[in-house]
Structure formats: C-alpha cells, structure tokens
Image (cartoon, rainbow, N blue to C red; front, side, top):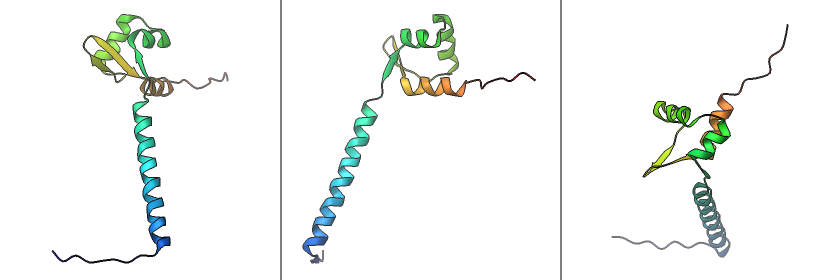
Length: 96
C-alpha cells in the first residue's frame, strides 16, 4: 500500500477538529432525543382518549394507534397518540 503524507495548516487542522466535534455533539443530541420518547400505559391512553378498555382493545386490533407490547404490558409513544389526536381534529363548524 502506498501511503501519502498530507500537510495542512494549524488553522485547517483546528477547523477540522471543530467540525468533527460539532458532528459528534449533533449525533449525541439525536441519540438523547430518541431515548427520551415518553411512553404511556394503556390506562393513560384510555383516560386521555376517554374511551373504554374494550374500545382501546379494538383500536389495537385494528392497528389504529401504534403500540409496543412487552409481556402483557402495552405502551404507546406519546408522540404517536398526539399525532392520532391531531389527525382526528374536527375544525370549527359555521352555521349558514
């Protein structure tokens, strides 16, 4: 293998190090945000939506709201529930 030596100025070296540091910070920040997804339990979802346990079961069976299941426990990302609520928003109705 033919190795080559590259010469760069101190200024270029420190700019490169600075860019690498910023990229690393950005990646670490993204990882923290991904880990901080707030999870809701089935009880919380039922309470927030004002629905019965049976209706919540039907929603899960039909795949209406994404969820995760670990053992017998059901979890919903708060972001997914908020998206569902926003998608089902009924705008103001005006009388003619």
